[in-house]
Length: 187
Image 1: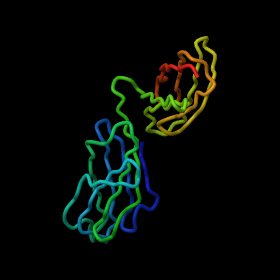
Image 2: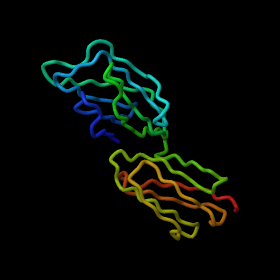
Image 3: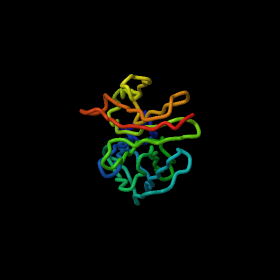
């Protein structure tokens, strides 16, 4: 997933965040002729409570031309949307860029359940923002639910479903479909 801010800050040409296999790369370009005194990098999980994760000291930017900078976050929070923001010295804060960083171990998804609200959420990798198609099947193989998303997760409610095992399939996000099963308790 690549996240772009349209006009990230008046002295920036661009601000981007890229998910990598072992972290998140944040890259930005300071416009030629613009400068700042130091850059601080912040991360948040809720777009409100940012914590400083890095810093670049000294004068940043160039009077001659555009200057590219990057910072690698080697410890993003797994299976969460990580929000990043820069503080460009006295010029203030940039817009926020967001990356979903998944780490599902050997599985290619994570299944979260909320039994009290009869809902499930499936997290999966969808870096290219493809149309992910979710289908849920009963034990007889009948499709009983379908949905789609271009995000890295899909949430659905199971109120009214009978108790037992169900199979789900997510297609459209990788070369092979994602398969799994979920259990519905009696309601």
